[in-house]
Length: 98
Image (cartoon, rainbow, N blue to C red; front, side):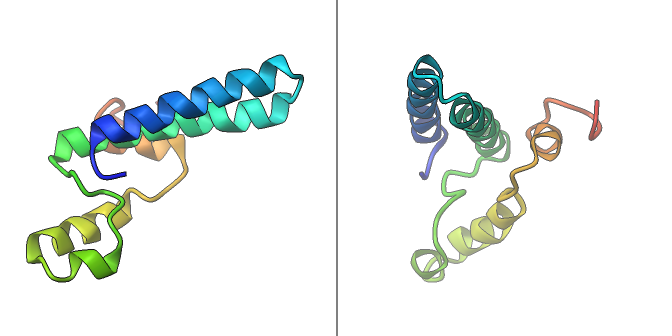
């Protein structure tokens, strides 16, 4: 996942999978994937706002390029799974818990 469009495509696919789980009665799995979908969309927004197009790039491939390395360092800040923090980081909320 290296750019906002790709992240959104993956999120949309996870949402389709959540729908399948829900219709099959697997509500907990559907809930989990739906939450992951929201998380991915927020991370795509963060990429756009900060002009980061390698948020999930691994360390080995980014060390060769200093600009990518600094993006990797920044990207680590966003590898969280807390929706309130992601809302804040994406600029869609002004405070955690709003």
